[in-house]
Image (tube, rainbow, N blue to C red; front, side):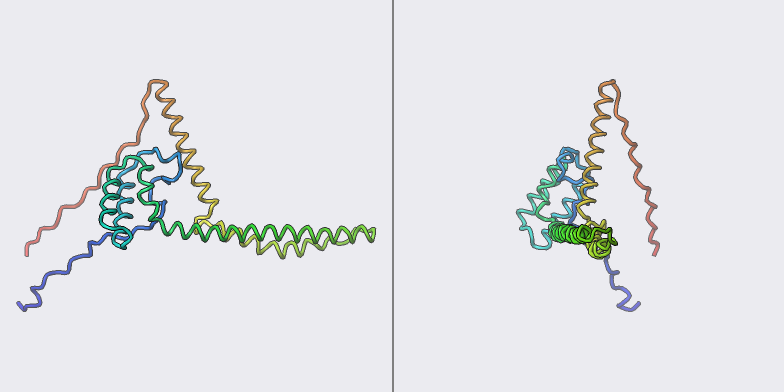
Length: 216
């Protein structure tokens, strides 16, 4: 057997996959007050730990900060305890928020300008009608439509679902608060009537096939 055939097989890359620095990685947004008292799951703690490890590998945390935050993430029991550990690591969200605020300012400026032009066009048309004493063709609708299309495109672009616009964020926060209220209401109703809260059955862990025996 030649020497090159005895070389060890290459080992797979065991480095953890990078995680997106986004609050969407948690089961519920820990920044929302109604979610901060919710119990954190193992997935929530693992996600926070992955963010901390990723920041340590990028040099954004020194060893002491990494050890302290990682230990606190493991000991955390609620989502509110995890939020301050990773809030300064959400650079992607901060940049996205700045872009979204810029888009909102452009959208508001466009709406204000369109309203001003619409008032001006209608005032000119009304003064012409009053001067001539006849109802003239309503021509202001054409410049209003022409100037309104860019404003509409700006609104759709600034609040798109792909960029996580503020409308989607507010809707998601509202849904989460409503779900939390329903859960608390159901819990109070069950306790008032002496019942118990039915929890979904835990799913059984997947069965892995037995390893193949190496007979070589």
